[in-house]
Amino acid sequence: MNAKQVAGYRAAEFVKDGMTIGLGTGSTAYYAIEKIGEMVSGGLQVRAIATSSASEELAKKYNIPLISASEVDHLDLAIDGADEVNPQMELIKGGGGALLREKLVAMHSDKFIVIADSSKVVASLGQFKLPIEIVPFTYEWTLKLLRNRYDVPFEMRKNGDDLYVTDNGNYIVDAAFGVIESPATLAEELKAITGVVEHGLFVGITDTVIIGFEDGRTEIN
Ligand code: 5RP
Image (cartoon, rainbow, N blue to C red):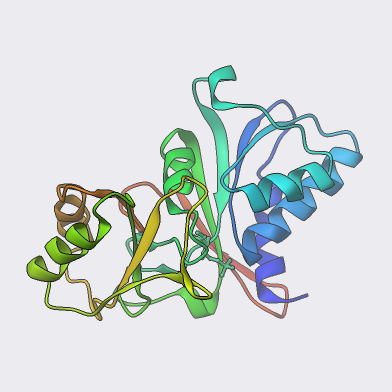
């Protein structure tokens, strides 16, 4: 088993009959969805909200019943991957471009479980470029605001020759902060910039981190 699979499968054990769950996005969340799908075919009853069209397709493939947010006012549990996780269980997410839906789902879940292999564990966040979702209208001006505020490289995410477009119809700027001294401060500052919809810093949201290892072990914090 690879380490992502170990973490994903272990997280699926937290899913219990009758729960309403959030399904994350990415190659680690894939394994959690796969395992939950197996559990559903074995009789587990759950309802789910997916954080991306890719995860929605996967849930459909595994016959996991999907609902819309208007049908519930909160989720029991959400399981998702991360690009970086620090010892305070703060995260950088959004490498796969799904950060806005991922944050919405995580915020409205009673329990948010992060799954990762050990390569995602860092002492300080920021080596992974921080994804920032911005609205397309006047996006060049938003980019200028960001560049004026922070002296770090910013790059518009691309999809081939075109700008990358999220499931919400927005663009993503990837910011190479290097070391983020205070994720909470940066998180607040970024949210205050007009044109920024959301960013990939997850601060004070994570309840449990499951790190998987290739030998089948997990570390749970
Ligand atoms: C997508 C995400 C993913 O959870 C993150 O990029 C980790 O992905 P992977 O499990 O494929 O390494 O935030 O927006």
